[in-house]
Length: 270
Image (cartoon, rainbow, N blue to C red; front, side):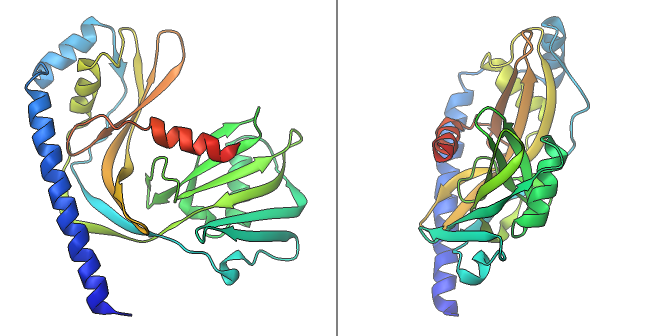
């Protein structure tokens, strides 16, 4: 391994990260001048007035930025046994076709989780995110310990199945060499994240915050190296019964627009 080259890459990553974080701080400072500042007691009172409720909130105080590299698959990685045909696209996407489709025990989360753990390389490091029975696809996002990399195109598995619940194909990308960058940062508490969304009218009266979890969203990426920021995932059930999801940078308090990543994931399925 060329340690001098590796050292130079990490120095460059840290430099770019520091510049980016400073620009984010300036932007956040300017933006916050135009947003009403609400104390914790005030936001709780306002939420109560609008009948916005939430369950127990997590108490995670610190987390680090994460760097990782896009895994390049080779033939040993692709070897899946006699029942498969496989190919590697663009070096980082493993596509595995099952010559004899695998019947799921059921078409719910438990059935899909059993499949990925049994048939996909390092399947335990992915978590089920969405099942679309109309399109016959299931999406898994990669995780680091218990935290999800949201909508990272280089850290997901897409499973294709029939109406009869038989899996016939899956595609896999993976992040590797995941590690923390510098020391852990102080995180904005969940009630302040709710305040951010409330101040932007993203949480409507009579809504329920049903879930808040800490994961990661893409901060920036190079050709093979990516940096991820600690990010709060917030799910809200509206008065109409629909569920909306939002993502907020847990350090800077900026709402993360996932629309481009969501669209890219959907296009990959077509």
